[in-house]
Length: 311
Length: 329
Image (cartoon, rainbow over all chains, first blue to last red; front, side, top):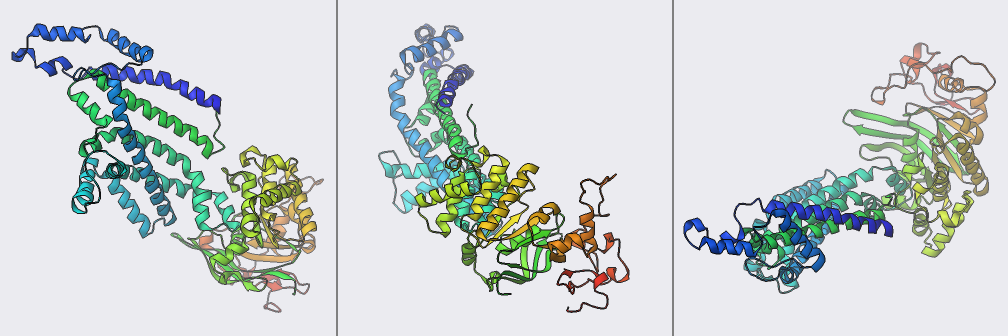
């Protein structure tokens, strides 16, 4: 088990290297570069072209891409340095550390919220298969998954902040502030998790061992929550892991709606200024978080189902 | 009889499907005495498994429904009991062993946990006591290293071991009735013999009544006292094991016995009953076996023969023995 865990973690290295390469080269396909966006285009007659050229030289943007890539990765690997923002001139690491906490709270909170509600909805749907409750809950999860989060966020804000005055709508200064953004993100995850739970449970309840449990007098509640759920868990865990990735990236929209200084907004700002080091570093942090969580999900399989072999 | 444990009267379990109503068990009556081993024999689809699931009321529902009859256990009708009352009986008074032990055991729980569950639920043992009892039960069913197996998962055991675990589970609460639904079908022949021996020895030790559901007449001869032959949801012959093997009355029973290969006798090909089981959606009018019956004559296709009691107490559903009406029906 320990050997397998170490092996899985080592496998992350080539994955992340490939990811870093894709990120690095693909963002350079976006038209425009940070210097010309910052100082205006020379053709418009704004800034002296010689100055622009000098700035480009200073940030190493005139070097061949491959040189730039190795310099960037070298700094990360050997110095733990993510570089400085071209726009703000501040070190990216500090900014990232500061913002990461908000995003991870949103993404993990949203995943947790979505998992709890989604699993509950899915189990109830499976128990009342094809009855009114099932149809109602499946319609609800369909709506939850179809509603764009910027819209849902504003509706929640309207109801809970403006009309009821219960929760704050802007910023992130405590637990109370996290409720609405987490719910906005989480509701999006409910749909898929509920549907996966329902179909996985329905698969399992027709198995022979469920009949065995019934033949021994186990109550219906216990059959569903213990015997069947544990067997249905693997597809559910997979769905949760995948949803986490979507919520992680989706947090940028929620951060914008709720004015939270998280990583997502940092990345969006970086993209609009073509602030290469910022985009690269935030995306790399997103990717690392995502692969780590999914590795964790893979490792959990073994705890859930003893038949899963590690080798 | 005083020591009648289970008295099933006119049981009808029907399945209401989109294609129509399927009378899986149709007007079935039989009794089980304390200490008796009754074999229910028949081809696949004759309703023998549904009969056993009906006793515990765990047949798939919907579409299944018991539409008539009584299942008297110690004089009380199980069909009148609430679900909660039934749960106290399942696994405690009446328990069941299934055909395929790999799929019938929960793959994500240890063997011990599955045995302990019933003990904690029905016998109100605490965790430690239940664990000790589980090890004891595993030893009782002939598992060589019970202390180790108790913490293992079903997939780590062989087929025979799994079936022993199933039996240990079923026996855990000392049931009055053990229903074994094809307990050896999925096992190797040598393992089959061991499991049968185990069932026989358990019966001798505990005096549990056994309902053995099987299509294997060899097993029947080994351990049953009485045999009920089922065909198309009905009992066609119901007698003690000796009479069935020595002098079968119903043409279907005769056919079943003839299709068993005999050691020491040269046979070019095995005998088989011609035709196949009719679809439950459209059973033939009259005797349901008549289209396949070699002895069929005029009345067979017209009206369903009654289950008649013969002078020696055996019962048979065939016009050959009921012309002019049953003596007692």
